[in-house]
Image (cartoon, rainbow, N blue to C red):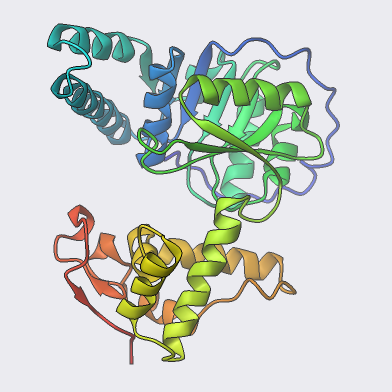
Length: 331
């Protein structure tokens, strides 16, 4: 994750900038922020045949991304060998070719010549806007910028970048290596050619692309997060138990995981932060509210699977594949 301080952006949005030249083919992709999503995006792009430059200000994150990508590629190649799809030699060669397409750096200068730069840093609008303002002064004018935000509005970041015509949301899902969806989000200023170019890029990397306007949560989270909040409100009212709510949605709606379990899996703090932002920015929308039970869990550090306990108990923490017991509501 890039370490950037917050800053006031007044005046940045008012600075005029001429529209860039025609969209060029995407050949080199920069990925800034090498956490779980960032290094997954880098791997996916390299597997799609693109030259990739992964950047993070922290050396440890760069080293971790390098190791994680190599391990992930090896694991996926091993599965293909086991299924008889390729030989061990072919699998090894494919992994080496993919790794050769990825380079790393700790400075934004490393992505100066990228055709597309995808941001995957901390989910904070002020930090992201400051980042894109800086990026706009480093990367060539013909480059396209994309944010991997899952819930923040795209337009403020696009304006801060100084190239709103060349800016989209590109929302990937974790783990990127396995999840097939990419939401491509356009603003009123985004060039149709830019949308087309990013769509082609994502599809070349094996993703199914859905297009969306710049609306809160885009498609998936706009539907999913209020659903999670409503499920928590239901158990908060004691209308049904936690296991029964989850069983009802699994067996009655055909969902692979119930909403309470899913909320634990995603992270209760993640869900809370999204809801807080929406309640702040869209106070008149009744779909956006914060269940007291969710706030109480986060206040006690019970964040779900990653902390070992949320509405369920996860005995192996982040390595858990399913909960081991019900924790219940806080007093």
